[in-house]
Image (cartoon, rainbow, N blue to C red):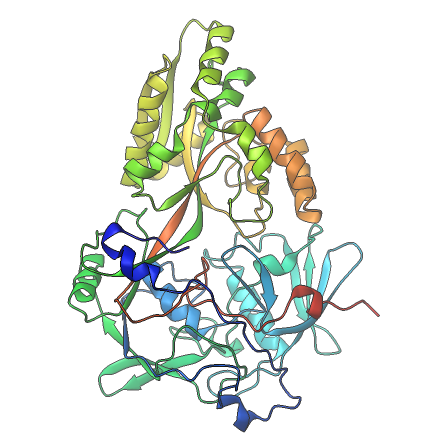
Length: 510
C-alpha cells in the first residue's frame, strides 16, 4: 500500500498503483536461453535506471543471519525461494515447478525448475536441502521451520519435506532464499535472482544478470546498482536526502529509526511484527475471565499507532495480520474499541483492588513508551498501573516467574499465522498461564485446516488469552521519479512473480 503525504499528493495521484501481468515461460521448453533476455512483445521497453542502495558492510549480508531491514532491498533482487508471497499473503511458485502433498498433509515433495545460480550452475535438490537446513538453525527462519522433521532428496530428484504435524499450506512459509549448498554460511552467498554481486571499480555493486533463468517484469530496470557503504541510520538518511542513495527500506517502529524530512515518494508494507498484550491468568485482577476478555474493548489502537508508531502500523483485533486471508473481519469487528464494555466488566467483578504491574522489555524504548500509553488508557478505567521496564535476564526471568499482571509483548508472525508458540508448554511465548495442551492442539489443527482458525480466534478472544494491538509496517523511501510502480511484500520489497498459481503447480501423488 502506498502512503501519501500532503506534500506529495499531486505527484502520487499521477502514479499507477497497478502492476502488469507477468509472463511465465517454462524453462527447458520452447524458449531458448539466448532468447530469455529479449523483451516480450507484450512488455514495454524500459530505459535502465541509475540506482544506488545503501548497505552496512559491517552487518551480515547472508539472508539466513541478517536482521538488517535495509538489506531487504538487496535480498529481494539476489535471491528466490521455492515460492513467493505478495502483500496479501498469496503464494505462487518460483523455483518450484511442481509438487505433491500426502493425504495426511505431512509429506510434501517439490520438483525444481531448470533454474541457474548467478555463476551459471544449475540449482539442484541438494542446494535446496542445504538451504533449508541452514535456515532452520538461524534466527531469521528457525521459528517458521520448527515443525520441519526432515528434508531430503528423493530418488526421482525431488525435495521431500516431512512435517511433525499436518500442514495444509506449507508453501506459505517456503519463500526462504535458496543458495548454493557450498555457500550457506558464506558472507555473500550466490543466489538465483535477477541480480548478482559484482565488484566494480567503485566498489561492491549489484549487476543485472543477462542469463537470468526466468523472465518476469521487474519494477527495477537498472543494469547496475551501486552500493554505498553507510555506518548508521542517520548516515543512510543523510545520503538519501543528498540524492546519494535512491531507495531506502526502514523500520519506523525500531529504536534506530530516524525521520526523513526531504521530498520523496513513500510506500509502506507490513512487517508481520505483532504487538500484543497478554494477561497473567494467576493475577488477582486478570484471573477474572470477563475482565481479560473485555480488555480488547478498552485499548484505543489507533491512538497508539498515531502517537507511538508514526502511523506505520495497522490495528488488529485478532492475533493475525489483517492482510492475511486467514483474518476474518466480521469476527474482528466483535472485539473492537468499546470502552463501556471494559467499564461494565470491571464494575461487575467488584474487585477490591485494580492495582496491576505491566511488564515490558526495556531494550525496546518505543515499546516502553507504548506501554506507558497503554497504562494511561487503563488508568482511565480505574486501574493503578505500575510499568515494569526490565531488560536482559531480569526481563526473561520476570516472564518465566509470572512477575506481572499484564505483559506488552512482540513477535513476528509467520505467513501461516502459526500461534503454537503461545500455547505450547515449551513454547517461547507461553507465559502467564497461556500454556495449555488443548489450545496447543487447536492451534496445530488450524495449521492442518485453515477453517479451524475461525474457532481458534474466537476461543482466544472470548477467554482473553491475548489482546492483539497492531502489526507494524516498513517504510520504503524512494527518490521522486525513480520508480513508476512498486508492489512490495513484507519480505520481497521488489515483488514479482511468474504468473503461476499453487493450483497449476500441485500434482497428484502417483
